Length: 291
Image (cartoon, rainbow, N blue to C red; front, top):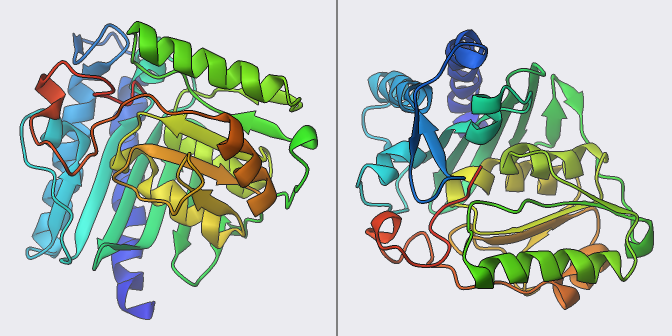
């Protein structure tokens, strides 16, 4: 664990530096470009921040590899190897950023041997720095995090997102999932607009569960570790072992809550992150996170 502490501290430092760029642009007029759909946006700030983060890391750790949202969107191959790899979402919540909705995050995960060693989620407008190191617990602004421990789904508040998919199958699946959960019944459903922040809310105990279909590894790699280090569980939406490349996730305060959600939530077709390098241009189902 201690081997990667210096890398994590460096990641925290550059996340704070990058947030200054985001906050300066937050209230300014933005040039917005579409990716896969009218709900899947990218701005010059997304691209600038990712280039800044990767450049700083590469200067310090020239042998490390990278997976970045905007780099992959530009055509770079997404490949998670055993090498030390930084998994970066420069602005998680781009739609929020464009509309000045105050939940915008930088997400940085670091994996070695395909295992996440640390995760950082910086909610910029809130000035909340979430972090976790494998085996070292989870924290927000250096305050320890703990999930609610809730085991009763009927007493749970659940977070999810609709995402950018607008085809009939995806929309029907997503709305049916919400109806099925409300019919259990759970106590409520919320959506913040950024997968990284959605998931870390489970780590804080503010939400009891989060699920989503269609996000990418850069959206949730850091948050997944933060949740588990806070005492929560992270699974695939079918109840099997979590795989950050599968684009399906449940994060919960306890195994009973996670398993109950898995019983009623269904996934629409998603190409795995590590299957088809051309997926961002293929026009198929589930090609973006929409956040």
